Length: 189
Image (cartoon, rainbow, N blue to C red):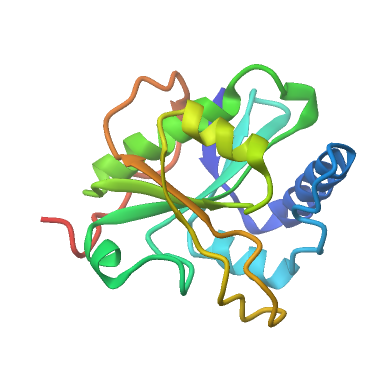
């Protein structure tokens, strides 16, 4: 499997991945990702160089966003002072499910974060998706806390506020990494 940076022409594929994942989650009784994701916001993250695509050389199997920018209102000032990178939108195409590609992408993210000088790989998961939370715990993440307030999008309770982290460290993820070397975090020593 090969990992490359996403390109602007990948927006449609990434949106369809999200729709496929949302449909699968609905079948499991979850409302995660039930709202469409804005294409312009996705394009901005691609142009920022934080979205990556996993493929077998022909077919896209998954995607992950890895960014030094935390979502506002989730992490404390003390936590934000620690060099960290944040995983978002980890998605595997259903035809590739069951191969632990998500776990390998998490290992890749931890390795990349380490090379950027991060101490932590952090994420926020859907507050009500206990299966997803168990998945992250099984992949070495530790639950930090659950933030339920402060979703400025719709004025209601925060829906993705289950916070977890694990140490950023070198990993043998087995992926062919064709992404450029990560930029060093400004707070990294």
